[in-house]
Length: 77
Length: 502
Image (cartoon, rainbow over all chains, first blue to last red; front, side, top):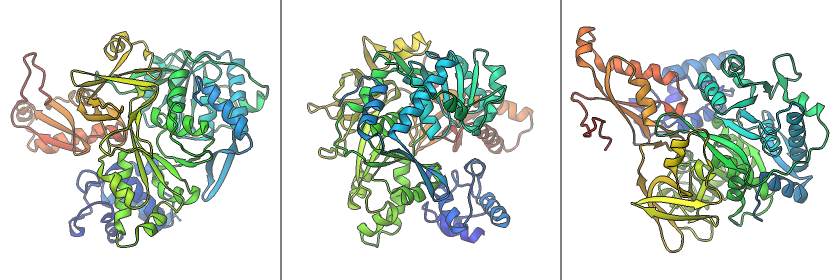
């Protein structure tokens, strides 16, 4: 999950793929804007064929948290 | 045609486009539903009739929720009955929303089910509140009225003609003092702002509305201007799904803030090895041609980038206090380094480098804030707080901001003092300065080193980050602090012992 996520992240921000770590924070460390983040969630919905709740997703700060959230969603489905 | 009231906009559009789609929205995944101009007008009249039956005609009616058909019906039903709409940001913390409801003397609160939390405490916190109306609840109960049921029960027609100078909307905006201010706008303020400039947008243009509806820019340009032109207004259900909804609704035009344009630019450039027409078709669809940009300043480099893909960006400028558009570029006369020509209903002058504007869209004042109103309005001129000038052809050029107010790239106004006052409550924070840096909000803190020593705090940076994290959890996204700087020395002060901002 983390690897897949990292592949997608590099399309949104200028960051070296190797520099993305589970504990990296989207906004503070990777330089995401709030709209970059929202747009990426949209792409993740397609990629993992799931529906993301905007309210729930607002609490996600790190890559690991996003990976855990997606893991949970895909398992539920 | 220039309209003097919002009712004229809606009834005029209904006469011309009655049976055609006015609003399209998603019902389920990939399934859309539409409402016609006649339905929108009639439903809003039923809402007006319901307000009158409740004895609420002329009262202040707060509305909160994401953009939706019920939101729009509530808004038109309120203002067209001579009542005052108070649109509230759906993402505000409950306590703050209650404070605004109370301060705006709201007696009826119309809410999206998402904010049932506010409704649950509003009864206690807002003593003036008489009615709660839920947009989703199917039937009324003892505490909450149902929007649907109210419309069903009041099928009678409703005929009332609001006057142009009548107050119709109070919109809250962040102030430099840290307390948000209620901008009082009349029918004429909003209606003329939306209709006085002919942008040569064809009738029945399909637009996708993506900005929050409590913003004056969205309300005026997407909704009021859109309706005056008989547009098909498609509602974007979530910022997560802009790309998907573009494919679903196939819009020709979208109103955006710079932040969105920057993200979409990355999307376009991602596949820049493909021919531009194909990339554009993939991201926006073949039919798409125009983006209106406002809310904050957009770097003109983006105009050129989008031009390559056959998309025109029309940059504009405004503020809520001017209902809100002050100037706008038009497709046949674009100046890339300018935020456009003054609207026909607006004149401007420069006072000590600062732009002052006057005209039929300038607000009445701030609700129950005479001092702040006196500071903002001087002999009928609105003091914008922006540094800039206007050339002989009425093009406006901006050079900076005079006030401290931060305008983020998504067009939200954030008062640095408000953030400073909140974080400054922490004992470890001796001095704090909040500012914008590279598009995000940054806090620079001079910690109380003695206190840290006494409390044996070893990692001060970490402790301060924790304070910021806790603060961030309690505020909407646009007010979050994304960068922290720790100082070793005190800030430089002005003679009156205030921190020097620049």
